[in-house]
Image 1 (cartoon, rainbow, N blue to C red):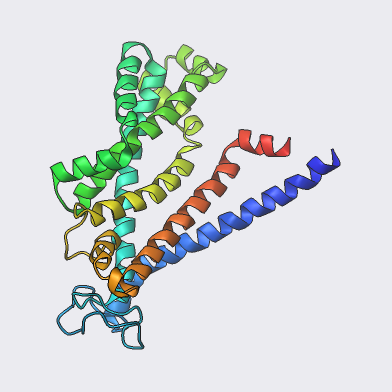
Image 2 (image 1 turned 90 degrees about the vertical axis):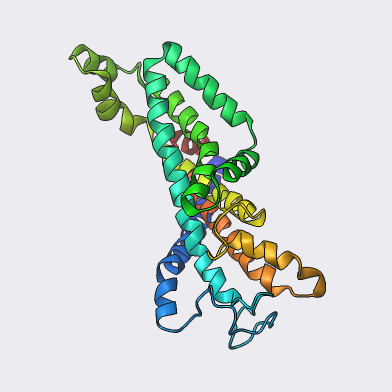
Length: 290
């Protein structure tokens, strides 16, 4: 029993530290996304679209902190503005999937019957497809653009929100307070909005952050394949694709800094989501105590 009591603070402390690291990394990238245009307006960084005035394949220096690419782009400015593009697309994608998956999950779990079976079949069919392959296919169909990339990425995450919310709804709808609301004459919309919603979305914020981390990688993959954002938009995947050709010649900086930024943002969101899961999920906390 003494070992169990001593292990709880260590586990909780480690989780809190990792979550703190995730929060710091995430807020750092959010800060960059908001203030990159301000830094450009103050003349602290270049316009990420300017290429003609810069020499090509210049190594990192005081003038170009992260060097320049083979097209003459300043890698530092494109890396900073890539944060803005990544967060914008990811927030749109995860929000779209959440706003579709959560209501469908609540309605399916509460109503049940044929509607539940049909939605389960559709969501399971989508979920069986590899997320990256589905996003690539949709991006090829809808074309390039911020909204189009968000739509292509969001489809793969809808079943996750649907299944989590549906399972919670099925377990909660048999509770006494739901039966009391039904006995008092509450219709389906009132039950879903007033009594079920706040009882079935505990895991949604956790899922949102973890999906955001995964969506960063998917967006990078789309950009690497030339299916993400337009070429004039600074985006990490597109820059990594351009840097791939120069790597064998020893030009390392054009791939290192966009790749490092993508990795740090994914790590930050993942650590934040995993730490948030311990605070939100009471069953996990109980297992840690035991």
